[in-house]
Image (tube, rainbow, N blue to C red):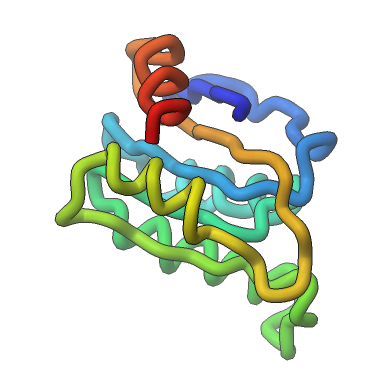
Length: 136
């Protein structure tokens, strides 16, 4: 499990060494559309194959990452091994999303070993969230 905190001005780090990975996007601060597209493109390019969004306007992240995945292949058919599954969880507690990630978020053809918790917030909650994820 890798915790990555993004604030409004954070430069997106290189997380490609973790790919292929599943990612839980915890959105606690609003994100402008242009930044959301930048982050979604970065996730797809870095090796995310399963994205689960929770928090502020989380349904838009499902769409944004889907579009980034399609755009990577010029809106043609996405090869099965590159297809990014996406879900959003606006009516569930975060603890259930953590449980879902550990027990249900698998790719149809690629073994995913790593998980990234992408926390979009000005407040670092790494200890709290890593503990909660471990106990899920």
